[in-house]
Length: 212
Length: 177
Ligand SMILES: [Zn+2]
Image (cartoon, rainbow over all chains, first blue to last red; front, side, top):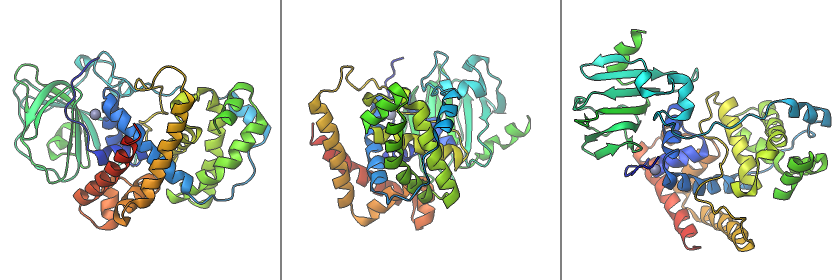
């Protein structure tokens, strides 16, 4: 799939991704962007050298003996887990989300939130902070202008939207700070479907999730 | 280290594995302690990381980076899975499209080592405020908002310190091209 990506996550967000230190909801959006963005993949690989260099500098701690050979042999019997392929499927849903939301954006169930806005909440691990959801906005639909109480990361999966920061097409990421205010409007022809991670569940969705 | 890993992959070489264990397990334990694990859990995760290295050795190829990078990634992912109890969205380094498909030539190997050297040198030259945020992210496993809380700084300040630190490292790597 070829995409023209013009909006990338902030460098500090990619660093937390490389460090493995970002919250799960954030990691899901970044992993989905990395699947379609060779430029950010290259940055993350460069950043990995930072982690490795710091790791090498750690003071070693004494460790008990290595596992006995029987345990090694037993471990071999375990299936070597196949690493989840991190690619966007043809159906625009990041491969690793298919198990949560199904294979196709058109076949999903959507909860209505407001006129022309639907959502599909994605469960996070118990105890994980933040909120992860898909968001669908009808052609030309818009959100009222709003601010943010925490970070918010949005990846466009289909269509596009425009706001004060520019126009975001499929593959683009909006990496918003808590002080950002914007008034997003979906593409008048195609509307917009995005994957959105936020530090706190936006108040708009409180009602929709309760209906389940 | 890469050849030890390849011996484990090719022949299930227990001696090679022991050497890898001695080289890496103590540092993995140290990493887990810094990430907030207690001593018993850190020990267990160090053992588990190396056991995963044994099991997955066949998946390693030096095109995926140095042995240390690969083992560090396994440790990092195990920490997300076990200490944060969250889903690991970032898999092991893949055979990426940006890498040349041919075997790396000796010069490229050298420059890979040189690049690692540059990163180490630049990290030690960072101003303390930048070095602090980088350490908190990579070694203590804090996200940028957790770092902001820990240091009682605005999120924007944490982000800009991280950006400045990375820009220096990136510039240092850029020179090598
Ligand atoms: Zn990108």
